Amino acid sequence: MANRIPEEKVEQVRSAVNIADFIGQYVQLKKAGKNLFGLCPFHEERTPSFSVNEQKQIFHCFSCGRGGNVFSFIMDLENLSFPEAVVKVADFGHIDLPASYTAQSQPAAPKDQQQADLLKLYADSAKMYQHILVNTELGEPALKYLHERGLDDETIKTFGIGYAPANQLLLDFFKEHQTDYQLLRQSGLFIENQAGDLRDRFVDRVLFPIKDASGRVIAFSGRILKKSPNEPKYLNSPETKLFNKRSVLFNFDLARGPIRQQKSVVLFEGFMDVIAAYRSGIQNGVASMGTSLTDEQIYMLERVTDTLYVCYDSDMPGQKATDRALKLLGGNSRLNLGVIQMPDGMDPDEYLRAQGQEKFVQVFEDGKQTPTAFEMQYLKHDLNLQNTPDQLTYLQAVLQQLAHLSSSVEQDLYLNQLVAEFDLDKDDLKQQLRSLVGQQAVRRGGGGHSDETQVAPPPAPAPLGPPPATVDGSTNSGPLSRVEKAERLLLYRLLNDHDVWLRLMAIAGFHFVHDSYQQILVYAEAYFKTHNQFDLGNFTDFMTDSDLQPVVTSLEFMDVANESSKEEIADLVNVIMNQQPLVEQINSKKAELMAAKQIGNRDLVQQLTLALIDLYRQQQQVQRADN
Image (cartoon, rainbow, N blue to C red):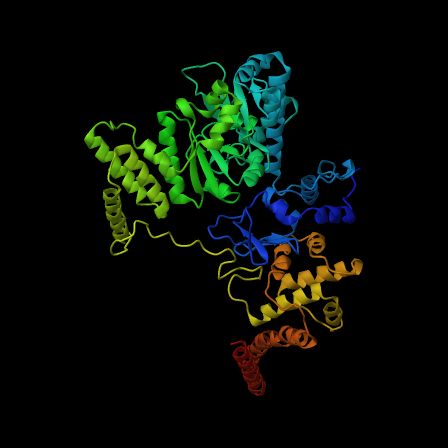
C-alpha cells in the first residue's frame, strides 16, 4: 500500500527549490522593487501583474487573484494532485523520493477525470506507435526513412516519434483493453462512420507526437510514407478536449528551458526543421501547427522571452511567409524580432543534410538579420534594379520602412547602404525620409513633421507591478470596506505574530465577519496545535481548501508596517466585533418593528423606532469615520 508523503519530506522539497527558479520555467520574471513580476500564466494580460516573492516563497496575481506556494502553482497550472505536484517539484530540484511516495503509487482523483483518461489514452498510443517503429518489422520502412532524413535513434526517442502501420492496430489494442467506446470516439484517434463504427485515423504514417507545455502527448501529426494524390502530406489530429492548435507550439516543452537560457526563441516552419536544429545544438526552436502564429501562441512566447527569430524556408514561399510573420508579430506582440536566413533557397533541414552541422550552426551565429534588413532584401523580389522605374519603386518602399524606425542611428545605417548600392546623395535621401516621417506623424495625429530624422519613440511600456485596481485576494472585487480591511490586517498579524494569536484566542466569542477569513482562522487554530511557529508555505499546504490559499498569500503582499502594537490590534478587534454588528442590530430591530406594527402594539413601535434611530446615528458616525 502506498505511503502518504510525510510533512518533513514535503518541507524538504519546498525548502530545496526556489519558487522563482521553478516558476521561471513558465514565466519570464523581472525584478521590480522587492518582488519579481511577469505575465500571468493563468490568464492573458498585457501588463505584468503576476508577482513572486522569493523571501516568502509565494506567488500572487493581482489581476486574477490566484496565489499560493510552489506546489499550488503547478497544481493549478497543470491540473495535478498534491502528490503529483510534490514529485514534479522534487524532480526539478533533483531530489530523490522513495518509490512508495511517488505520485504513481498514490492515486489521487484528478480534477477532470475525462481529461485524465484522454491523456492516458494518448500516452498509451504514443508508446505503442513508437514500439511499432523501433521494434517491429512493420516499422522498418518508416525507420529507414527517418534514418535517411538524418534522425538517429536517440533523436527518435527524444521526440517520441512513432509509426502507424497500414494494417490498423490501435483500435484492436484498446478494444482488447476494454477501453470505453465513448472515450475512443472523443479522442480524435479514430474516424467514425455513419453506423458508429470506428477505424484508425492514422494509417501508414510517421507520427510526430504533439505535446502540451508539460510534455504530455495531446495529439499527433502524421507524415505520409508513400505519396498519394488523394492523401495530404501531413495529417493532424482534430481538435479535442486536449488539443487546440491555436494554443500549442511544437517542441515548446523541450525548448522552454533553452529559450530561457538563450533569452530568445527561433520560430521554424516545420517539425523536421525544429528537430534538425535540435540535434545540431539549436534547442530553443518551436513551430506553429501549420498556420500563422495565433495570439495564444504569441502570448506563450512572451511569457518566457523578449526576443524571437523567424527561420523559415529561404525559397520564395518561405520569404513571403517570413514577411507575413514579421508583420503579424510587429503589430501584435512585445517581442524584439529578427530573421535567420538559410542560404541557397533551402529549408533548415535540407541545409543541414547538404552542408553539415558546422556550417548549419554557423548560420545561426552569423546570419541574424533585423526585420528591416530582411525587408530591404525581400522588397527586391520581382523588381529589375537595373531599371530606373523599379529602382525608384524600391527606394520609395525602403524609405517607407525606414520611416517606421524609432532609432536615428539605425536609419542612418540603412541610408548608408542605399547610398553605397545606388550611388546616391545621402542628403537627398534624408530629406525624402524626413518628408515621409512627417506624413506619418500627421496620420498619427502629430500635426506636422519633425526636423529630425528620428521618429518619435512609442509610448514607454507600462511599469512592472500590479494595476491600479486589483482583486488582491479579498472577498469582493470592489473597494474594501473598513471592516474587511481590518479583517485582512488582523489575520496577517495573528498568523505572523504568535503573541497576537494568543491575545486573540483569549477574546471570548471572537469571530471574523466574512466566512473566508473565519475559515482561515479555523485552519490556523488546528495548525498551531501541531506547529510552534507559522510557516507560510507549510500552512498553505495544510489548508485543504485550495480557494483559501490565494487569500492567505495575498495578505503577504500588503504594504504594512513590520511591527504591530497592542493599540493597533485593539482597534482592529473593535472594528470587527463592535462596528459590523451594528448592521445586524439594525436589521434585527427593523424586523421587530415590522412585527410590532402588524400586531398594532403602538408602545412597542415607538420604543423600537427610537432604538432604530439611535442605531442609525451610530452607523452614521462610523461611516463618517470611514470617510
